[in-house]
Length: 99
Image 1 (cartoon, rainbow, N blue to C red):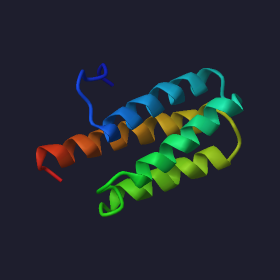
Image 2 (image 1 turned 180 degrees about the vertical axis):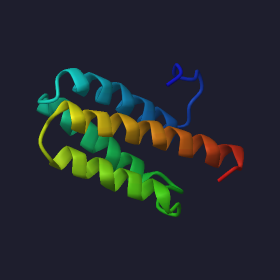
Image 3 (image 1 turned 135 degrees about the horizontal axis):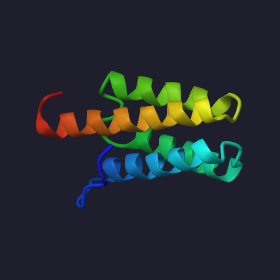
């Protein structure tokens, strides 16, 4: 994934913050404090205007929440990374008018 853009809206900031934490969790999967931060970020993403009206974003978040509820592992952290990367792409596509 490319570097963090300079100017982000709140959704973009949340997604990039979550991605940073997910990358950390790949190395330290059982850090419950960071897992709680990801839970809070996912809750904030769902609260963002426009996210609920999109069909795919809530589904991606739901899958990520399931990964958090399961066993703390590098595989779960990888699933979180993929989810945040997907949310970033979806939000960028929505802003560009492609979605």
